[in-house]
Amino acid sequence: MIRYIRWCAYFCALLLLALLVNVGRVQVWEAAAYGANPANKRPAIDRYAEPRGDILVDGRPVTGSRDSGQVLRYERTYTEGPLFAPVTGFSSQTYGTSFVERAEDPLLSGTDPGLSAFPLWYDLSRGRPGGGNAVTTIRAALQRAAYRGLAGKRGAVAALEPATGKILALVSSPSYDPGELSGTGGRVEAAWARLNADPARPMLNRALRETYPPGSTFKIVTAAAALDAGVVTDVDAPTRTPDPYPLPGTHTLLPNAGTGCEDASMAEAVRWSCNTVMAKIGVQVGLRRMAGAADRFGFNDAGLRVPSWVSRSNFDTDMSQDQLALSSIGQFNTRATPLQMAMVAAAVANGGELRSPYLVDRTTQDDGSQVRRGDPRSLGRAMSPSTALRMQELMVKVVEDGTGRNAAIRGARVGGKTGTAQHGVGNAGTPYAWFIAWARAEGAPQPAVAVAVVVEDAAADRGGISGNGAAAPIARAVMEAALSAPATN
Image (cartoon, rainbow, N blue to C red; front, side, top):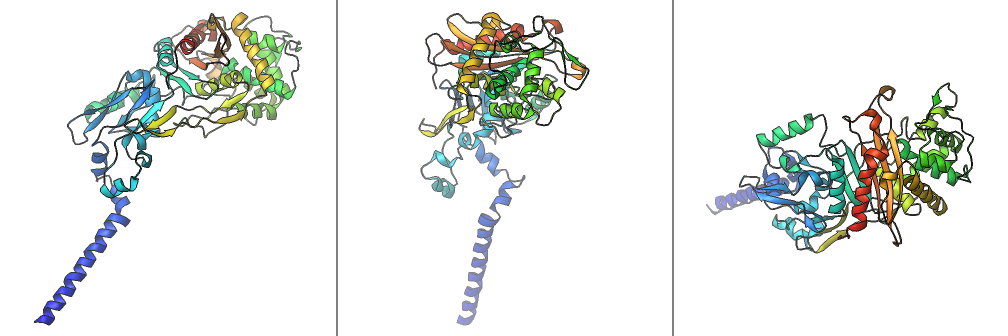
């Protein structure tokens, strides 16, 4: 009898060992597969069981969490959602996350190891700390000035602090309310379908994700390349450029929008936006040096993160001479995001050094204790300091007595450049109105802001589109806000 009991005990021990092995298999080897299984609702339930951390602007949260009483308990809420949507993005229980909500998701959802001094404890206890907060570099006054300026027209504004790379404003218009996508159910699905079907594409972040022909604003890059290469040594010297200018190797004549560009100097060409002069200068600089200059300003960089990814701005590296001429005035295949063109203005304002743009100043725990700071860093020199000084002078002339007078601010030194970019088949589309600029308060040691504005208003009269008329007043409003509103980050 004892022998049978002993065998029974052995068998029970074997069963217990098999059970432990299976538990180990499920908990260790198969855990990832079970966790990723769409039928497993526990990760989603756990994810929304606690309030999400907040995104802050000027020290105040522009996001929140609402107890829905549903299985997925806490839904995301947004303060002034359309205003800050290009910054925050959305956090949806149905459609996931975007922009800062996505880039900082581990921190905001409470799964970032940096939120706890003992992250292993939360792994063992299957718990998590409260969601952390992302403090942005955005300044509300600039954001509102840009949003009001666009007034629902299709377009975008990007503003930077030249010395640091902080993104001070990031506006895309028309916008949408990301709160419509929070939660689950038919209401959210209907909002998603409506927003994606809207021909105005309100969910497109035009400031970061859309690329446009930059038009004459790209002439700043061409002028800087010419000075650095020594192709132009005297900006006031005549360039012996005919009007119109025959594109090299073709019978095509490149005209100017205005008069007075024949034999104009480079200073006059920047001031009055002469296509002929700047196209000829681009050809003289040559493809290799033009492409190198564009790269130094940030073009052709597919790896830019702010921390959300930014679309690659393009300057071709394989072109014929006539194509190079057009590319040098921001046409042909040259394309840029508004953020990229703000970087061009910022490099000029910052003495030639280009700072990497960034949107999150620091991240904190829910009690305000710092987790990480932003990573200000240099992207290198876009141009020499002497060239930057000369380019500042040329851009100031544009605003003082050139095509950009609508950007002038009393008591401040403002440099700018207008642009009217043709596009569409045969340039039949309504032109895009551009303006890039920087501003320094009287007596200040360095410029406070660099800004880029693009307006693509398809409802406007084609003949009335201009960078000075449509875009410069918006840039001026943003720069005035930057000069008058104290920084709080």
